[in-house]
Length: 418
Image 1 (spheres, rainbow, N blue to C red):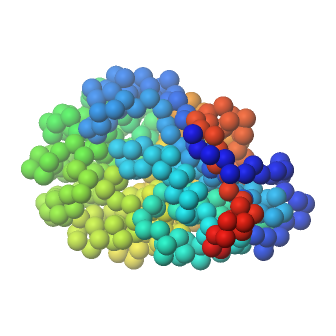
Image 2: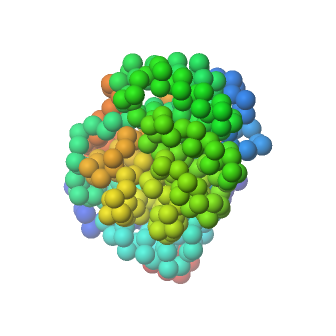
Image 3: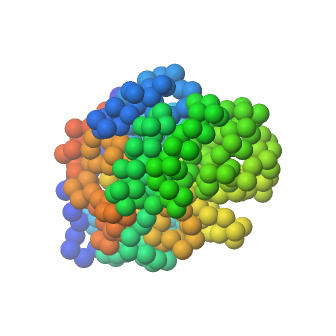
């Protein structure tokens, strides 16, 4: 159980006149587990792997694990961040994220104005290598707090929104051709113009699935596929070549994590743009892949590269290289709002619909005012911060360990750096 250092006081509603120069005085870290929705659980149970995808994980996946960060300033104004963790993909557990923040990263956040998130990130990078997900959690909370201090939405801190609604990509689990085609038809009927389909059973079965989907939805719906490391190099070449005439936007992670040279060779042998998910975290990871010719599209979320700042760097980098960016994740209500702000701030540079399926995947959003898709589009929040409010009662019900709280007073009394 995580040890509580000190509990913060106050309701977190803040003063009536927040100051943009008010310093961060406290951090609370909360781990939570949220069960899958009935729809998601059924789709996973009916798949041959029990996971709804071809990834070779052996442990059962029974719920989603999350870490939330609540930070507050000396006026009592709060900011929140959320990250979604699954060891086969993110490589870190909730306890590890909490540990590195509580033991190391918190000292670079406490006592600083949240608007200086770039300077905070630079200090974290100088003193703690990697740990991008933990840094990303703090980056998100700092952005939320900084925006709430001035009563503006986060996208205003990122250059302003470039759209009022974001086209979404429907996520389709690993299934037989007929089932996959039916799910795709349902998405298209709900207004979705892009679909992401899980593949990886075999090259011939993959072909049968995409043929069935094309026959059902027609040639104009945009398709991308996700293999979840299903193949080794020769089989991956065959699988992709068999789909080239079916008009795919991109293929995600066809090879195992770490096979960067294989990805470069694979990209040279297929016209379908490929990219990594499980195998790419930092800005340097993605730039290396692109410059080696191992990726012709960039895939990101908010936490894996380390927050909104590096995510923006990657979108801008991809744009300068003539590539689009796929924003993809299955977050809860707060994480969905985070990615909506990110997508809105760089909408004209993406070139691809955004994948946001947490409201379908999980049984709860843990916010009072979740964003809802209409006609295949997600509205961009316009309220202060990320524009949603954490449902603390619901979060407390899903909390798995005692929250850890670190305050500026704790840091000062222990002689920690600021």
